[in-house]
Length: 350
Ligand code: ATP
Image (cartoon, rainbow, N blue to C red; front, side, top):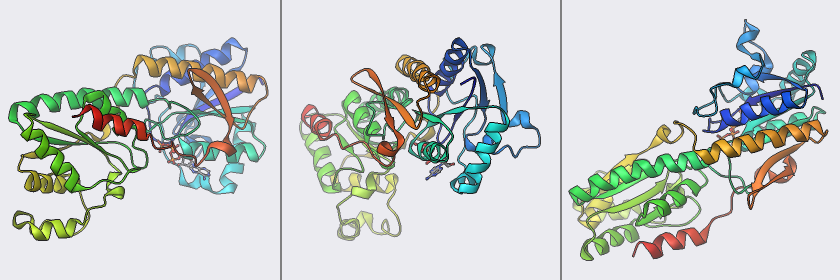
């Protein structure tokens, strides 16, 4: 191949810039030229009035001063139009018009589905897992997970200090709609007392008892880490709890929120309980050294695959060795539930 393209798609993740830098420089090292598309699949549809807004020809200099920066300088976006096979064919036409022979996409499961579609239509693609969620079964780590974890830990350390001073419980919501990996790892790294994730059932009563147990055993504060999607595995009858507790009358109506949960925990445990949602803070910030290294390794490996005419595969890492797997075997395969980490959080909290 003489010319390849690179793009970032789906949610941004720290380390994406390191991966793009690596793709560009490894390609140049292999005498290939690189075009960087902006805003994921949107850029490749080339609908902007000014094509410079859709793509740019990358040079060594284009990726200078980027490795330490968070976000993605190529920008990212969702593109629902791209689900349509006619749009996918249009993308291939556009890429071929520019003399592009292969595409490296950096993103999550959805991005890989798109890359798989292009590959099945005859256009060679390779994927790099870039998502803070770490929700892909085939790879030990996705790009951005380590940075998000470190950011969440730093925030929780701060919350613990103030919770300790005020002798209160803190419920901290971290990202993870379907995968509890950020919550589990953060809970372990911060010495949290309890963790709730979408993959494992939990009850409000057991957390309230845990807070009470902590107070009886001289703990000044309790840290409870919750994945944002954890309400999906809540087993308690919230309506009944609220009906039976006078101070909670009026709380039940529509959907559960973390601030409602904090109020219920406070009523059941007797310890003041505050809710903090970390939100997009976890996505931003400078990538960790590990993500910069991972992005650099993934990028070069992906270029080498295309150089060797291997496509339809995603790069990953297992036991610190780079691997590649066919898209068809990995899309829709979530990270299995890490029961041993869940158990460890509870053992170490006692
Ligand atoms: P994150 O893990 O951060 O959410 P993601 O890559 O999974 O990242 P999605 O929004 O699911 O993010 O997907 C990104 C883009 O990939 C979509 O906007 C769409 O353009 C494309 N895409 C998703 N699913 C498909 C599919 N089944 N077929 C073709 N393209 C798809």
